[in-house]
Length: 403
Image (tube, rainbow, N blue to C red; front, side, top):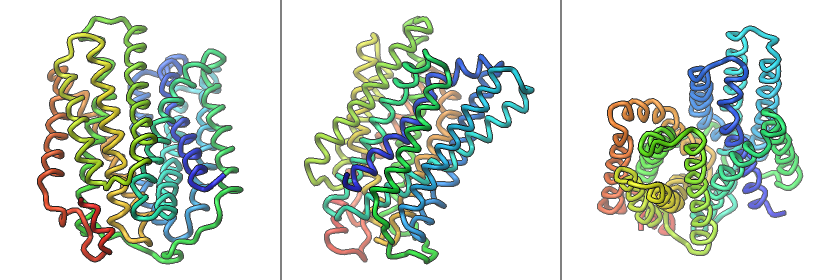
């Protein structure tokens, strides 16, 4: 199996492990005697550690190589899943005091947040190492497709296997993650980056980097605000019960993942799109989906909005990941991948708080704010001169990322 496919499968397994807990967390928390606030803290703590750890892992992959960091990430990821499952099993038996149980579960998910970006940052950097400048957008589309398919399979697997036992999906995800570590060890050759052994620091003042990081942060904020509030919104809007709400939100999220994967695998990989072109296509479609959510009057329009969000995200996400990669030097790919993960991590950490606060003011407020943010980004990518998007010290081919 060629290295690109190993990267794809390994990242897909990581995102399966990330998504598998979504359908089982709420009933698991309730069965253990904890409440919603405990679940919120567990999720936020994991996101915070991910945000802090991503740039560090990216730089370490520049120093020590991609393969060792990928293996460390996958083994640590496996351990965090096993630890969370074991602690949850103890909690289900009622063998420990609730405060201590919560602290231990919190620490296990913080380990999850620590090791997850080791794989994603080094995997993205290795994909950049293996692709030419003209192939970079297609390579980043494979990364995006891995996350999209993982988010499709993860929740579905969690819901299906939870019928056996609430913890069974987490155990299966841990086994898959260990298999991915073995696959990386056997199939990925040892690749030493040019910066190996050096303490390389990516210069954020490079004009080709900051716009893409800003777009990554703002886009992820808008998307996560949507994810956090969509269930409340559709339930309140149409008076659905809990079961029907879960069904329609599940269908809609499936549509997002499916369309993202379809765009990235079928469209982007077949053509050599430049990053800014991907953003010019994706951001208006993404904004259209957010705006449609404000005016939905039936469940069909709700699902249609999510289809648009999937198409828009499918174009735009490889746009900013490839943009940061192309604007960075060959010796900076790990650091670049880490910064991209960190930028999206900021959005994932801030957006749940902002989204729920806006929803309390007005149910449509998160989508209005998301639309305005994406609209401003769209104006920016269509109006700014390409020189603001490229590193002038790079070659002509690299500077063309602004086209």
